[in-house]
Amino acid sequence: LGYLNVLLLVLPYLLVVGAFQFFAFTLLGFDFHNLKEAQENVTTFQHLIISVFGLVGSVAIIYLFRIKLDEKSFMSLGLSIKKRGREIILGLSIGILVMVFLLAILLTLGFTEIVDFILI
Image (tube, rainbow, N blue to C red; front, side):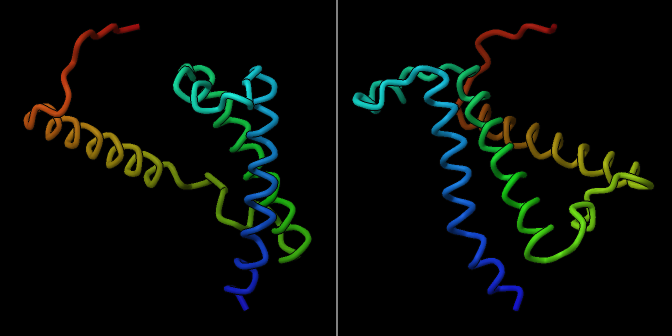
């Protein structure tokens, strides 16, 4: 039964998230007639805006399906952070270690280089 819910979620998820991101592209003034050029000139800030709109769409559709289809609370997905301090610190630490390790590999193999470093 769980896999059926996933199948019921996929199409609405793609449509809603796509609509939210389309709205972000429109809000940012993208020219849909020349999409290839628009994609090549996207700034980091514009990527952030588009991603935030995608995240809002994702949360909205998951919230809707969790409340209406599963008839459970949104927090029952395990999003509570009460008594999770140790797990949060462990997860952040592992994430940072993985990124540093992969950066070290890329630097060692010559696939990337650090051009400038600004500490804010």
